[in-house]
Structure formats: structure tokens, C-alpha cells
Image (cartoon, one colour):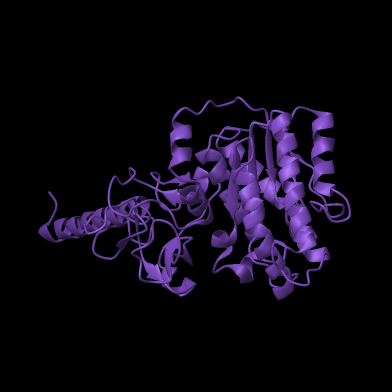
Length: 362
């Protein structure tokens, strides 16, 4: 028989083991710093986020005005809420979020979290209130794409466009590192839209890359791409080199540099429509740091946007300013124009979100 003293020791040991097992299991199922609701979709004005998180921008998270406020949440960073679609009722400048390219990056939160349009999310889509998953670059772009894209996605035909029929053209914003293309391919590959070994064709360049100034460099990039193989989808920027290298006495629509670039954009889109290109995604720049270049870009932006939106083919306009807002120190190189690796990734996420929204090369 076991003495009462020995029995007491055995009981204590078993209790300790049970407690350790319980703590171990808790760590496995609660990997988000104890906040199992983090980045789970929610309804405003409910208690679905527990006692420590708030329902902001359609997910359970925390308000923030700097990265320190998000340190208790794994891999989280403070992203801009102000001016972001779906976040109209958020009083704080930012909220904690986790960006991603693939589902594997979200497992740090829980096995249920998935990478959706550039951010980690769990739970079903909210059906009411001011919810949604806006807040990251990709989610912001998806919200900007609008209801028409959602309607198109419902009838989306997958695998209809081979990767080599997707052509990227433009200036140094794309070509300074070509990282936007690389990140875009990774996103497409993670979604099953691009298979291993397939690549998009990137004709963007560091020289001869204007819409009109010094020749039609971007149009030449397109012509080169078409001469090599069929093109069904074009992802492009354009106009930045014209604004950087040209000069305007007054930065408005009457400036010859601006007018010529806008006309070249219209002509190029018309040529693409004639060639039966199925979709164009036109990504237009964040604000340049240089005030003179910014003024010219600001004059050109609405003209190119009109050219895109009135084109004789589906041209999906993407303004990158909301994507870069609050992140210029991290997203823009020292030249004040071109994206860093982080800016390239954010740009690719925004482009991919638009492509998903409108069923472009899925």
C-alpha cells in the first residue's frame, strides 16, 4: 500500500503535470498573446471580440498610433485607418494588422487564419455594419475596386489566362528593382493562378520609359511584348517619367508635357482595345516627394484616370496614394520616387487585390 504521505506527493505531482499540460495546450490554441479573437471578423457594437480587443474595420484588433501599441500581438504592425474604406468610424489614426502573401504567414495567429487580399483574417465575412477587412494595402485596394468587381468575381473563370500572356510595362517605379512583379507572381502562385516555373513578362524599363516625352517608350514596350506573344492582360504605370523629365510653366492640363502624356495614354489604351487585350490594371503613383514633380503628377492624374475609365476595354484604375499613406518613410526610396522592398510588396498586394476583385488572370 502507498502511505498517505507518499500518496500526497503523487497527487501533487499529477496536479503539476496536469497544470503544465494545460498551459502547453493553451499556448498551442492561443498563439496570439492570449487574444484568440485577433483579426477575426466581427460585427460592430457586439461583444464578439472579448474584453481586450475592439471591432475596428470589421475585425477584432486594437487602435494604435504607433507600432508599440501592437507589440503584444504577434507580427502585428500599426496600419493607417484614417481615410481607409471600411474604417469610417475608427477614431484612432491606425489599427493593428498583420500583412501576408501566403497562408503560411498567418499560422502564427492560429490554424484558422488565412491570407486574404494581403492580410491575415479568420471567421466569416461580416454581413452588416461598417465591417470588412480593409486596412492593409491589399484590402484597401479591394475596397476601392467597388461592387462591380464583386459581381464579376462571382462568375470568375480560373486558368483562362496563361502567365506569359500577362505583360507589365512602365517606368522606374516598376523597373527600379522589378520587385513588384516578383511579389505579384508570388501572390498569384499562392492563389494557384500561376504554376511553378511560370512567369509574367516584365517589359518595364529604366530608360525610354515615358508615355510621350522623348518618344513613346511605354508604347514601344507594349509593342515589343505583343510581337513576342499574345497579350491578354496588361499591368502598367506611366506618366511619371514625363513628369520627372519634362517641365511645366504652370502645372495644369494646359501644360504641353501633361497634355501629351494624357494623349499618349489614350492612344495606347485604344491600341490595346484594338488588339483584344482583355484587361488593363493601371497603377498610378503615390505622391512624389519633390513638390514640382508632385504638382505635374497631380495635374496628370485625373487626365490619365479619365483615359483609363473611358477606354474601350476594361481598364481598372488603381491610385496608390491610399496604399502609401502613412508609410512613406518605409515604402519610398531616398530618391523620393521609387518603392522600397516594402513599398513594392504593398504595391503588388494592391494590384493583386484589384486583379482578384475583377477576375483578372485568376
